[in-house]
Image 1 (cartoon, one colour):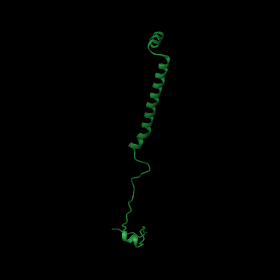
Image 2 (cartoon, helix red, strand yellow):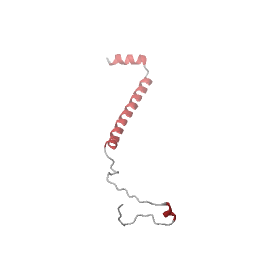
Image 3 (cartoon, helix red, strand yellow):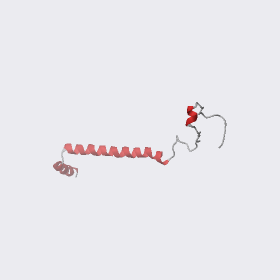
Image 4 (cartoon, helix red, strand yellow):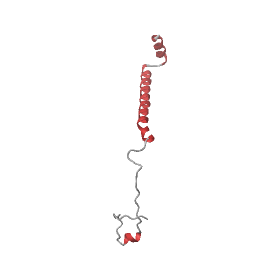
Length: 84
């Protein structure tokens, strides 16, 4: 049986072509496996929350005027607590 298959292959395909097909299929399988591994590695980034960006945050704002900047007024935050 194996001999019959080989006879059919030898009639229509050369050894070089068979070797080329083997390496092309091997290269294609490597691409498929690497893409599956990449998908598995990247999936947690899109499904889970970011580990470095927490949802607890504070926004600190301060009104700064152009005139105060040119006059040399200090524009830094002070420890004084004030609520608007």
